[in-house]
Length: 119
Length: 119
DNA sequence: CTAGACAGCGGAGTACGCTCCAAGGTCAAG
DNA sequence: CTTGACCTTGGAGCGTACTCCGCTGTCTAG
Image: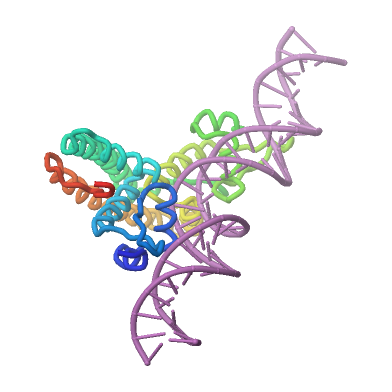
């Protein structure tokens, strides 16, 4: 698929996709005319990239993970390990959020000032 | 308290604190000699800023919320509303994470490739 | 053969959130 | 009166993640 279609399917701009290719997040085959040609799985990969990003991973990290996966001798085991790592990250983030939520909840209804400037 | 102490107490660099003042996140009184002088509550405010940041709020948004709070006629009610908003954000993030976690879990043990490039 | 959609490239620009630096002022201790 | 810790300012620079631009090449339909 060419860049326009990938853009339409993922909601990412063509510029963003070209940018992702430049930083190694996407590796594009080329058609004989020089146009980029992406396999359909790229859509899945990009969906993953976006969720990983919302998890707080940088594009560089996401790219590194992708390479680790690709280079792993035992792909299934490597994948499982990586997923387990990410699950741990997710769990840690959720714990943080849970604590923050409790903190916020406890403040609802109280007049506890966060910012006493100019008071 | 002067900037050095605030820096030590919050773990934020002096440069960061000065930067926060420039963008209006902090408003500093000054001592007669020109040194910044922060009230103790600033520590609490900065703790809040950092947690709000991990929630994905930009500094601009955080600053705006701070002003809304300050300008609210009924401070306690405004605070409660703001906290409830934030709780909703937290809940949404947690839902995302839960979904992602389930997705990851379901992939552990399967060889399901995320990225089929160069395969 | 031309119009128009689509693609390519390189490079500049933007927003955010810092981070560092140089040059200099303030102040308490020795 | 100097040393040293602490403070001031303005401005430059950086990393991340885009975003835009101008110019050019490709392909398909009429």
